[in-house]
Length: 265
Image 1 (cartoon, helix red, strand yellow):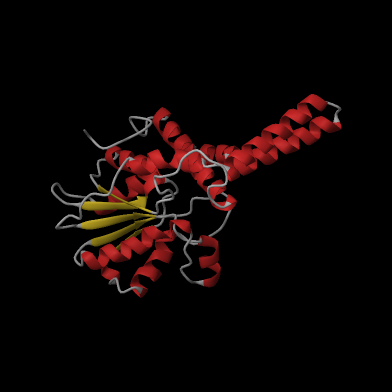
Image 2 (tube, rainbow, N blue to C red; image 1 turned 135 degrees about the vertical axis):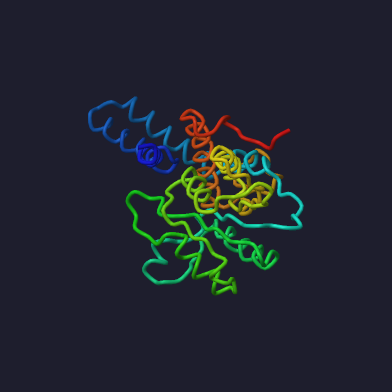
């Protein structure tokens, strides 16, 4: 139920869709002669789009998440590497049988790099279909093609293709791996996604070392207009709002213990 509620809410809450809903409401208000409501809805829609696409708001919201878990020095020994899905174009790969990457594809590039650095480590890829409506190939299936093509031996791969969200990533990965005390496992995911991921892995009893990738900010952004191209700014704002809402929702539902998880002091 949590999965379906979260997906439905986010379908309307993301900035672009929210602005469209506001514009539709403004149009309906205009048709019924409610001029003030129509103007208010149109103005709010413009404000949402302008802040999301023309300002540095997205970067400013993302940066605290990305800085929360800095990458540690490389461990001497690593038993395994857990890579969270979300880095592939599932619909394209299902149709074409390739391994096309999206902006989060750094997760799998880094997985290949780490596989070479730690040749005895197992590689766990956790990622199924996270959409209610769109069809696509599970990231775990695509990752197997990509990583083996890059020279990773198939017997090193542990594939989990049923998870639909980060909670299920953590739960199903732990069930597959059954980590032992004293083992070192790296967790590879986008930097902005690391706080929620680390909290969820801790919650299910899977101790991992954060290995953030896919940074979206430089850490030098200030308040400003037109600091990036509009498409990237809109995507940054969308991802930031989604992640902050996700943290609060997971905290309120009891899946994590704090709305802004961080390293132990």
